[in-house]
Image (cartoon, rainbow, N blue to C red):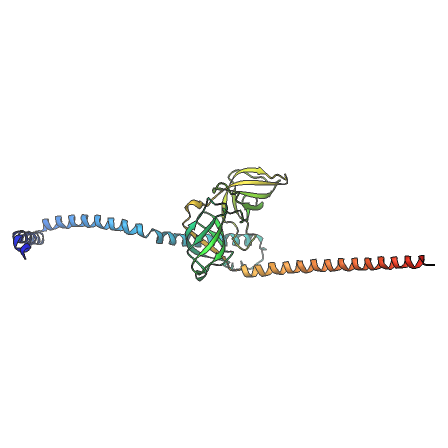
Length: 312
């Protein structure tokens, strides 16, 4: 009360100023237009600042949406490439192209832990079994290959980084389709080595290295890196290429785990082939053992015959 009594004159003054402004701007068109113009300019400035702040805090959501869209476009490109390959090998009298099976799916995840300077590097993401992540799923980002999932929890998963000597990736040179095995040498996180390439192949600086598609982990044609230089293996039989990796492992933020819907079927076929080979090997070993047993029996009979002949 003392405060109001002490400053009552100021409150009366402010009240009269407000009332005079209301009467002025409501009853005079020119002053009203000036007020509206100034108010719109001020509100536009405020809204612009608000939009800048909110857009900054929405960057992660926008990035996730862009990653999902990018992944969908990559899957479409892979499908279109397979359709083109099918068209190239089709006979002229066929009645059309068979619909392409959507073989691959993806799960977008955020990187919560990453290492690039250790001898064996791993990456942790914030998606797990409840989100559809499974072991042996390939992982990529918007630039190229990142690694392979090797351990899965309910809400997180661990990835063997491409910067890990334990990981070998089947790759090929896109220009001539010669394939080899990609391996990190444990030194620079920006480079890896593509080994076991045929010596007769022609390789150029800047050639694109992509996944070969010879496994159920990665689709064919995902970029891995670019050729920097050529090196000869110590054996002299093969050629090794130094490759600059397309993925910047020091700035990983959002990745995608690629799920091959035909992986179970492919694994089953591979296991059938392995079982068939094992059965054939066992059969060959059994046949060899029988031959050796027969030869040993004949030798024993021959020795017995010689002993009988020597007896008086």
